Length: 152
Image (cartoon, rainbow, N blue to C red; front, side):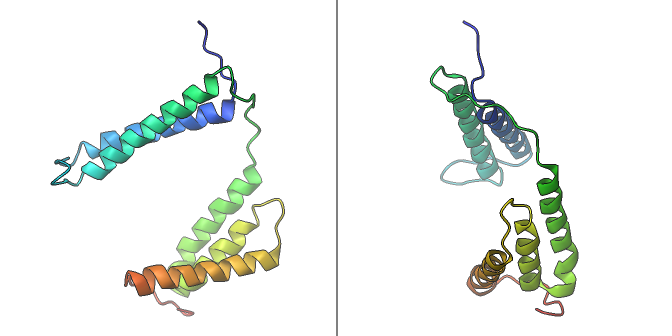
């Protein structure tokens, strides 16, 4: 029986999950695993790695089944990848200067430009929503301290 990859994106996503799971599993070996009743520092990474490997195997297997929908890998959108990477780098550079809330807004607004149907009004609304989310969850809820910056 010959293995035929019918859905290439799903197959390669499965391979990526398997590789990430193996990396987590190998990294977890540096720490004590412990037991379910007394977890060590490596317990969660090892469990996460196992789940990723199982998910990747299931996804890759499904992509090779005769009932899988045929799909091929498209050419990468390097423009969108560059915009997202640039937005993350700008976030990291702006964080100590502008503070977390302003930096999150900039990240979301510039990252939105990577989409093919960019609308600045939607980007502003999502940016303000993410600022509120970060403030509520991380600052108010968890009490984390972030650089205040100029615009705090």
